[in-house]
Image (cartoon, rainbow, N blue to C red; front, side):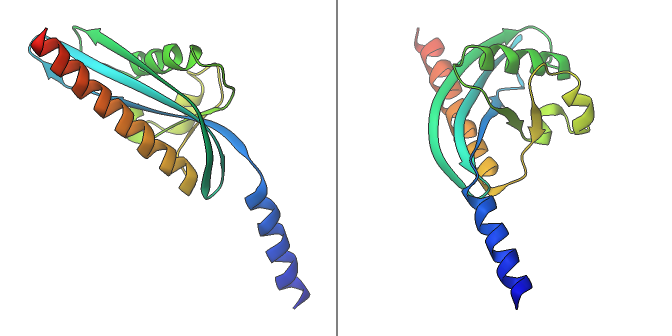
Length: 147
């Protein structure tokens, strides 16, 4: 019985621990006419393993290129977007945004802490980043089309 109580107490302490993350998503990695128009959204948040406590800041940047994006280009887009934020945290992405490369390879390309999403709160922040990047890209395309 004491073992169960100890496990419960350890779990409760772990849930109260807060982490700072920056969830990043990129929309638009497919050709439009003769170029690629991508939007990178970074969501800085304070989280515990299963809950987003607070979204502290969101940054959005657009990128246009004539060639298909590769891993190095994606890393650079993320670095530029995150560097404009006034927030320290681990950069979190979905593996697909990094072309499903092993995390240790991508880790070596970033000057900041990096990881793939794992916890429920990281997934929730990724959802926010995805909605922001997709909505911003749709807005940008609409504005360019009517401009």
